[in-house]
Amino acid sequence: MNWTKRLASALLATLVTSTAQAAEDKVLYFYNWTDYYPVELLAKFEKETGIKVTLDNYDSNETLLAKLQSGGANYDVIVPSDYVVPGLIKGDLIQKIDTSKMANYQFVKDRFKNPSFDPTNEYTAPYLWGTTGIAYDSAQVPGGKLEDSWKVYFDPPKELEGKIAALDTASDEILAASIYLGIPQCTESNEDAAKILALLQAQKPRLKLYSSDTTVDRMASGEVAMHHLWNGATARAHAQRPSIRFIYPKEGTPSFRDNFAVPKAAPHPENARIFINWMMKPENAAAVSNQIAYANSIKSDQFIDAKWMSTEAINMPADYVSRLVETKDCGPAARALQDKIWTRLKS
Image (cartoon, rainbow, N blue to C red; front, side):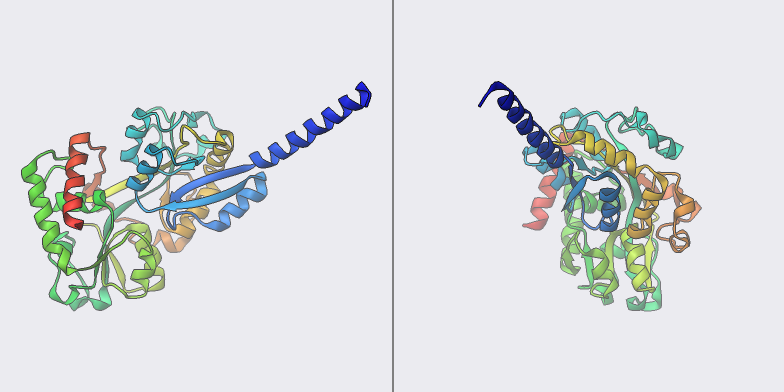
């Protein structure tokens, strides 16, 4: 074979390799909460960009963090909650994406720009936000109505015992107990921890189960009469079972903001940026809210289904704003204490 043929062969091999690599690179590995993104929207993204998405799910921020810290998370886009972000930045577990420089950042609502956990929007982009309260089925409740208090969850009516579900996440359960007892959110006191554990242990025999998965189906089917639950999941259950109500506890209702971020070792960071920018487009953000029933952080109200705008679990009464409690990033000592509480409770 002469040098001309060799060159042609080499060029052809390079072209084939480049083409295969380009096809291989048109992928995105997405790690998100369970039931927190409509698969139909992924199909739209794939059609518009040519990027194929693989979606995996997790059930808590703790699961996400453990996966990242172990080095086993080979994902391009993740969805951490607000209080988790500072630790991810400090631990060098996510990379800068400079959200404010993306074309569709212009559609982010002003109150969701420059959050305290990422003041310059260098590491995250806003996704959905909501609250964690109490869902209950009024058809299974004596008198059809419960007090707006954590008391009905921790000290429920006798008729509801064995028909109550708790979230299987330490941070959610311990925070609810702390708020009810008037204990600081990130306490490092052993005395406080003992009180929290005592409350949770007293409640445990009254529960049917701990679970953060299939919560909508569980409420909608009537399997449980009460669930410690997120407002969006409650709204979706209500759409199937109109007797379901949502409580914003008067002692304090935890609020959360979930965000897009890109792991430090993401194999396709540019595809991740394309996806995140695409998700800040109003009609795409609204498509998530319409399907998942959580409010988004984008100027997309014109695309939101009217049924959600009239649902109390989503459209929170204005005078309940004072009840909202922002979830904090607890320090190592407080987290270690929470781990001890949860281990003792679940053992």
